[in-house]
Structures are given as structure tokens and as C-alpha cells.
Length: 103
Image (cartoon, rainbow, N blue to C red; front, side):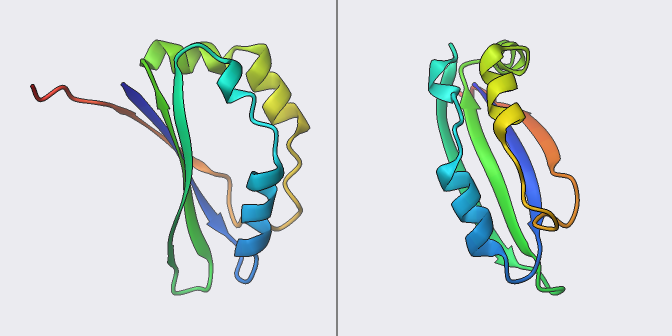
């Protein structure tokens, strides 16, 4: 399994708006082979008042994730998404994680 995460710093006082944007978006993930599940997780509020979030997407493999990034579903999801001005303090930070089989 491969986990793809984007970490977001959201402007102070705009957490509810950020969650609404994600709740109302079209993701198209369910159309993509290898997609397992998606979670948007909220972390603590930071000392500067910003809000910390991460998207957590589970994929069957790293290749399934990479295939998605080159798919029509990816282009549709990212082409239609319009993030309101000033909502994110900085560009999201991506982290990819390869699951370790401990059995």
C-alpha cells in the first residue's frame, strides 16, 4: 500500500471554509484503479493562528498513485478546483509513504 499526503496550512479563522471547499469538491478518485480510501484530517491550530490539515489517500501501490497523477480523473479534479484567494498560507507540502509489511 502507498499513502499520499498533502499537508496544508490554512489561514487563521478560515478552517470552516477550507472544510467546505473539500466537502463540495468533485474528486473523481473512485473512478481510478488502485484507489482505496480518502480522509481529510485536521491537526492542531498553530501558534500563529493558522490551522493544520492533511489529505490522506490510500492507494494499492505507488504505481496506482502515479497512474492517477497522469489520468483524466486527476486533470478533471485539479482543473475544476478553485481555492479561494488567501485560504492557504503556502503551497501544500506533499509526502508519499510506502507501507512496510511487518508480517
